[in-house]
Image (cartoon, rainbow, N blue to C red):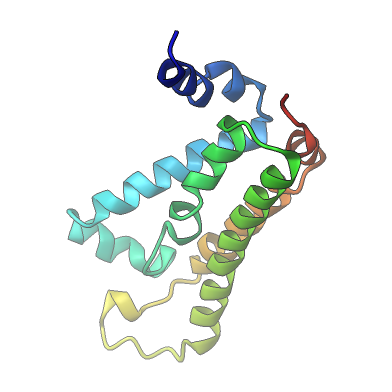
Length: 153
């Protein structure tokens, strides 16, 4: 087996995914689905206009940028310091999502001029604050922390 094949096997080894805590696997799946859905919204403007009051302008803000880091955390051989940095980066993207949601909520004065892109639903804090907060709590769980502290030889 040449080094190129070994590299591909080390990156896409399904046993690494199976060894990851359930929290990471669920977050990886959720991030991928939400990112794909957000990209599809570009081609579905009616649906986008209907959900933007609930999700905000960027439904995948905290997830899209973290996709690399979640899969790197699970699949790449790395020292524990790198895994902890990957997890910290994931959490920082989610915090950015929360801050953006708080900014929108606090700066909303009720004037939307019949424009769905300027409307904020009473449900928007669930998507922009509570769900990212839920993922942060899961990413800080003891099982994920133990996984991040593992080193591969």
